[in-house]
Amino acid sequence: MSEQAESIIRLRSVTKEFERGGERLRVLENLDLDVGRGAFEALMGPSGSGKSTLLNLMAGLDRPSGGSIEIDRKRIDQMSEGELAAWRANNVGFVFQSYNLLPVLTAVENVELPLLLTPVASSERRKRAETALRVVGLQDRMQHYPRQLSGGQEQRVSIARAIVTDPILIVADEPTGDLDRKSADEILTLLETLNRTMGKTIVMVTHDPAAAERASMTRHLDKGRLKGEEAPNREPAWEAKT
Amino acid sequence: MMIPLRYNIRSLMVRKATTAAATLGIALVVFVLASALMLSEGVKETLSSAGREDIAIVLRKGSDAEMGSTIEDPQIGLIKSMSGVKRESDQPLGTGEVVIVIALEKLGAEGVTNVLVRGVTETSHKLRPDVKIVEGRLPSPGSDEVMIGRAIRGRIKGVELNQSFDLKKNRPVKVVGVFEDNGSSYESEVWADLDNVRASFGRQGAVSSVRVVLDSPASFDAFQAGVESDKRLGLMAKRETKYFEEQSQGTSIFLTFLGGLIAFFFSIGAMIGATITMYASIANRQREIGTLRALGFSRFSILICFLFEAVLLSLIGGLLGLVPAIFMGSIELSMVNFASWSELVFRFRPTPEVLGIAVGSAVVMGILGGFLPAVRAARTSPLAAMRA
Ligand SMILES: Nc1ncnc2c1ncn2[C@@H]1O[C@H](COP(=O)(O)OP(=O)(O)OP(=O)(O)O)[C@@H](O)[C@H]1O
Ligand SMILES: [Mg+2]
Image 1: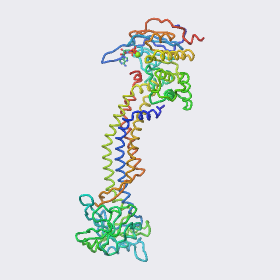
Image 2: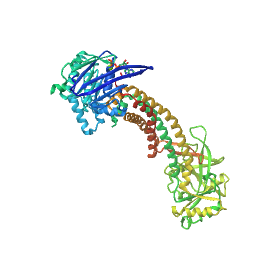
Image 3: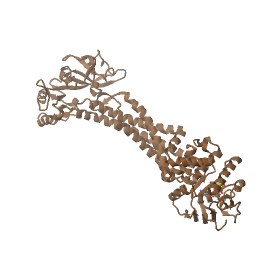
Image 4: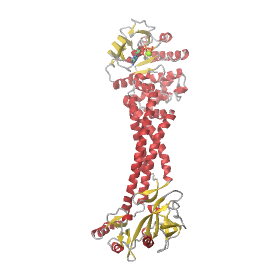
C-alpha cells in the first residue's frame, strides 16, 4: 500500500464484538486498513475469521464496536441507522453470494430499484438501468425474471444493480461462491473490467485463490487480524492509467 | 422514496394459495357486513317509499303506529275540516282507515305469520295513485272482497288470487285482485273494505288513523297546529314520509347492529388470518427485505410497503366479498317489521354508501391486521441480506 495514494477507505483501531448467549465474541481486533481509490482488493481467510464482518462495516451495513471508519473522507461509524441507509444508497454497490435479486421483479426492474433512492427522474431511471444491463452484456434479458436466468446471468444482473447508481465503492461477498468455474471467470472478468475501465473501487471477499488472483491486491484475515503488509498482485487501476 | 407497488402486487400473486386463504376471510366479513347494511337500507327504502310529502297522517296522541291508535268517527270530520286540507269538488280529501294484524298459516312452511290488514275506503285509492292492480280487479266497495299486495302473494294460505281466507273465524274474505306500489310496504298488506273490517273485529264507530291530502307540502305546519292545538281531541299529526321513516327505524337499526356485531366477530378472525399470512410471508422474505434495507430503503419505506401489501390483500378480499353481496340485491326477503309485528317483504339494497363502508372496513382490517407484521418487517436488519 503506497502512502501517496489517496485512501478511499480508512479504518483505524476498528474492533467488532458480537454478543451471543451472554458471551462477548470479539470478531475484529484493533484493525487498521487503508484501501486506495480505484483499487480492486481481495480479502481471504479461514471461515469465521471475520471477512464478512469487515466487509459489512466498510459497506455501512453494520457499525463497529470501537474505532473509526472513514469512507471517501466521511465518518460512517457515527451515523444513525437512517443516515447509514441513505449513505449506502448513494455510495455503495452490493454484490451478494446468492445474487439477492427480488424474484418478483424483472431484470431491468431489479436494476432500477436502487435508483428509486436517488434524485434520478423516473424517465431517466429506465434508461440508466438498461445501460447498466448492457454493460454486463444482458441487453436481451431485460424483461426476464430471475428464475428465467442462469446463476451467472443473475450475478451479472446484480452487478448491474450495483453499478447503476455510480457508487464510489463496490463490495462483493464471495460473488463467485455459488457459480461454476466458467461463470465465475466471467463474473471476475466483469469486475476486473469495471475496475480498470470505470475506475470503480472494489473490495471482494473470496475463498477462491484463482478469484483473488484477478484482484490487484490480496489481504489475509486471520482470527480478526490482518496479516502484515501485503504485496500487490499488480498495480492498482487508478495508478496504472496515469 | 417508496418501494414500487408492483413488488407487492406480484408478491401476492406468486403466493396464490396463502393470498387466497387470507382473502377469503376478509371477503366473508365484507359480505356479511355489506349484506346487513343492504338489508337495513332495503327496509328503510321499502317503508319510506310508501309515504308522500303532501299527506298528513293523524293518530291518537302517544301511539307510535297506526295499529295502536284509535280515533272516534266524529273526529274524522273535524280533522278533515282543518285548514291546509285539500278539497276536491268542495269535499275535503281525506279518509279514516283501520289497521289490524291477523295471524295466518304460512304456505309451504310450518307456523303462522302476521299479516297487516288495512280497512280502506274509495278515497284511500285517491291518496295512493301509485297503487295499481296487476292482476284481477279492484274489490267492490262494501263487499267481502279484498286485494292483496304483490309481495305477500303466494306466501300464505288463501292469500292468492281467487282464493279466500278468514279475516276472523267464520269471516271469510275473497281475494279478487293483486296490487303493486313501487315496492313499498303496502305491497305486504291486505286491503279490505273498511266497514267489513270494522264489523269483523267489532271496531264500529272508530278508525286507526286519518290521512288527509294537503294543499301543498308547505301546508303541513298549519294543519298540524290545527290538529294539535285542541288538546281535548288528544290527536297528533305527522307528515306521512316522516311517519314511515320512524316505522323503519327500529328494524333497520336492529339489522345494522346485528350485522355489525356479526361482522365485528368475523373480522377479528379475518384480521388474525391476515396477520398470520403476512407474518409467514415476511418470514419467508427475510433475505429480500434485508436486501432492500442494504440497498438503502429506510425502515419507514419497508413499513409502508408491507402495510400496503396487507391493505392490498384485504382490498382484494373486500371486492371479492362485494360481488356476491351485490348479487343479493336481486333477492327478496321477508321478515317481521318491528313497528307493526307483521310480515314485511323487502330487498337488499346496495347503495354507494353501503359499498363504501364495506370496502372501507376491508381497508381498516388490512391496516390493523398488517400493522404488527409490517413493524416486524421494518425492523429487519440489512445484514439479513447475507443470511441464507
Ligand atoms: N450477527 C452476529 N452475531 C453473532 N456472531 C456473529 C454475527 N455475525 C458474525 N458472527 C460471528 O463472527 C465470526 C466471523 O463471522 P464472519 O461472517 O465475518 O466470518 P467469515 O470470515 O465471513 O466466514 P465465512 O468464510 O464462513 O463466510 C464468526 O464466528 C461468526 O459466528
Ligand atoms: Mg462470510
